[in-house]
Image (cartoon, rainbow, N blue to C red; front, side):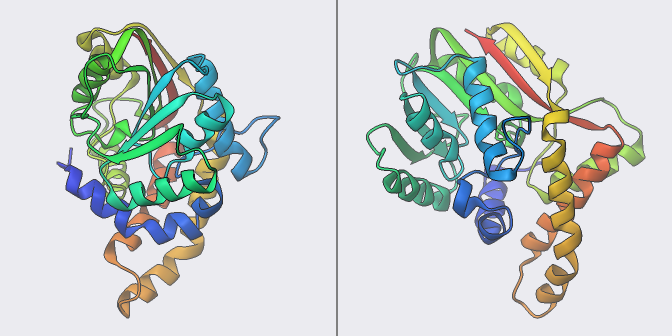
Length: 282
């Protein structure tokens, strides 16, 4: 692990706001995450929305539910849930710029009464015990230095019978060879991720926190197009990022972000990680 702190996560997302907005299309999708491709979603904008649908279906989110979006980014999932499942959502992120963007995006959709966003750490949430029916974490738990801390806080916040749903990247072994571990850590450092835990390690964390009915699904085949698209963006923009970095237009964080797009694909090709969905119940 490289000891990533919450300040590193903030610096990463503040420093790459332009990249996500203009290269990954966040200005249109409000979503920073991988897409779920199937017969109903064959292009990026549809696929990132489809990931929300798949996750919401897994834990049967409905109008009566109050959802905590732990690591909400610029509000894409919260907005989708409020509009498509008519539930209430509280999104949290430690990144102040993301809170501002999420609130603006919710206002554009006129759903401020359903979806609110605050600056907070998902391992120390400013809400009482048993405040939520669902804890939702889409590509955010990876940033936790200690994944168990997230599970404990999610368990505290959920009502009895509450559901946890996670969409994220998971390592497929521990330990790897020194060469493979070096590769995966190269990628993770670029994206302010301290480490990935395996599905088995996540199960241990969930059970230690008190969760039951743990289920994990490897959905890498549905995210493969996103994995490839990210690599293609890296191949296309790396030379320009390095050039612009030399003249002070592009930051070191942005160059590192582009390098991460390449390393993640190389690590995936070596079967070091998968993309998965995880559900559990209190």
